[in-house]
Image (cartoon, rainbow, N blue to C red; front, top):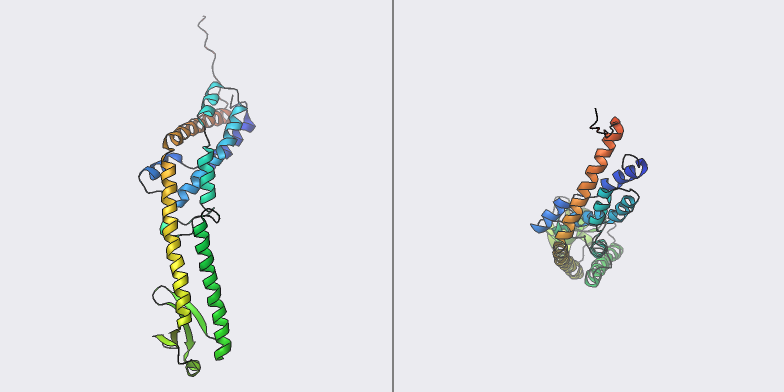
Length: 250
């Protein structure tokens, strides 16, 4: 039947190529090593199952019908993963940035605080440049010193007395102010809380996926059978194989 349905077989091949390795993801979920990319891939793979079921329905063969019965796109799980995980998540949970906007009100609120704090830092930089007359002044950040104001040595005489020296470089000085410290606390506090919340939300998602291990395994088996059948059909078509008719007569 698949040999005769060339167009449907080609569409099956294309759809199957976009389905991830469900067995590998199931294993990673069970052993607690799944990352956000695994869950995004799982959602993508499950999203192809309705198309595969549709294609199977056009092929009149008992084995294909059996495969179709074994395919379940697990709509509720798929929709939850699509709603929760961004399209291109980071490789590790520790990086953050994997939860989609709109999934968690608290994460969205903290992102607003984080963005607002950065906007305030940018506004402060522009204002301080104007007030001090130091045009090449810049506000920067690194993980060791946090936020700081960097001033080239040629302009040190214009630095207000209220600024606190934080680091001395060969060509510049770095300073901190009370205002900048407050912005730093707000931004970094929000970042830390976002990472903590995203890690908890991700752990809950993995736990949810784990409850679907059995139907996911059924999907994996059905998909492997379908892939095997279409592969055999493709080889038969390419090599002009036929099924012989056995005659017991002389």
